[in-house]
Length: 227
Image (cartoon, rainbow, N blue to C red; front, side, top):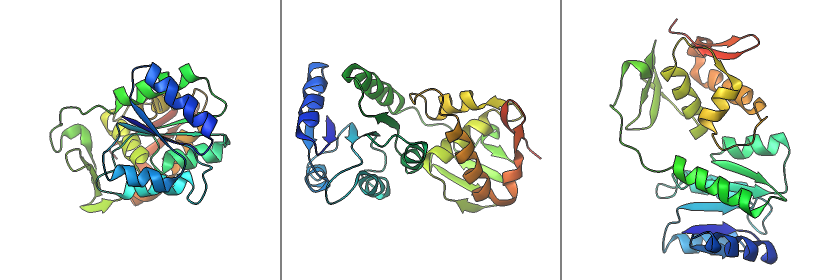
């Protein structure tokens, strides 16, 4: 089941029709109120969320989803006419899994949805802590989905967590911005590598003294060292 939150009736009906024609089941909502009411009856596999909505905007709805114990892991794809870099970075940083800028083709939408659903399928749990997830005083616990620095928990957004995980799994290796964008955002549009720089900056800040372990490789990208 896919939930579509879109206040424009004609767009909402076209999206629902296309989703059902592609083999999905779908429901549409014109506002956050109806959407959250439906969540109390059943959880969707994915939410397609417009930003410009009456009463409660899409970013507020996204924040509520990511802060709820039952809804934090629901894949969310933003679909909006607001296509500036800041809008994209804000949505992705709040936990959106993908971003579509209006106007977009219906087949493009289906392709993105399928990619997000493939990426978000449950996978077999990894060991709690392994060498590849432990650098200096920084540790990732995949089972708890937590990050600690010298035993102190560091609160990261989903994308910051995935970015740190990519660095730690590739310790000592120089990764290009394109490689990092592909690993962390996967189905996002090409050419948005500035998003990587923004998230590396916030990740370094949150890691405190350990932020210096993430080093800039001039003309390439970034590399995480153990010291």
